[in-house]
Image (cartoon, rainbow, N blue to C red; front, side):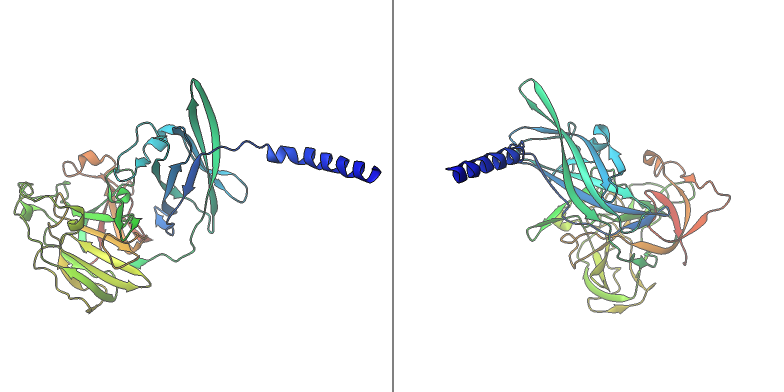
Length: 381
């Protein structure tokens, strides 16, 4: 009996000591994950990463995303913080590429948060802390979830030659645009991807900031129309398409579905799972065929007005597979270009001159990605 009493006392002690662990409150909430993590790219002298955080609500309540903090894993310091208004501009319903006005995820629903971070450290390890509000009756509860670990890639930058020559060319892109290439998701082969994550549309201007000489509706009046398109590196042509025709005016341009978004295009295999895509090319201008070897600087086509586009320009991006829409967009930089200025207010694009650089003369940039809506000039012709 004495032995039995001692065993009962031990079990009581163990049960009491374990009770706090077993009584922890469990809450169904959010699954967060990052399906693809590109390497960093240098913009304005700072390493920058683009990635997407996918959120799925597994709870029975609608959840409002109130705050997000990106933390350094090593010391738990806050690298960057986004409040509700900041997140509203990054929060999107899947498949719609539209901003969610309320940051609310209904039960069983998913959302994507588009993120761009600058960090001077190498080999950075980060984790995300999200604060949500849920309503149960008249009572609102605030809780946090932490997860989605990431580590910055150490992969070297993909350094390319110029895709065009001369200028001025505007590097048209902005990660904040709700319908920009950065936020358009394509599902090919049962997987969602963002091929244009780092895409740039190059549009040529005159020194007064106009993109056409005369009537803007006439395609041949655009300064960039017919400009020579150049191989950005030695490589092998992997595919071409040249069966799209052009309308002579913008107003008569037919609508194109997603599967015809590229228009006439060339894909150039650079090796190491890096494929360069040149899109919206001029009919009959493609000078290369699949399997052909090219050298950096070779003329391979001309700027045109085919596919899903609102004006003559060159769409350029790098992806990790031989598919214009079924591949992940990866970062790249250009060997050398000159910065002339930028369109700080993009509503003035094509109407007024750009804002020039503050320096006494334009400055030369090496091994970087042009900043959003910057006006640049390439060396050469």
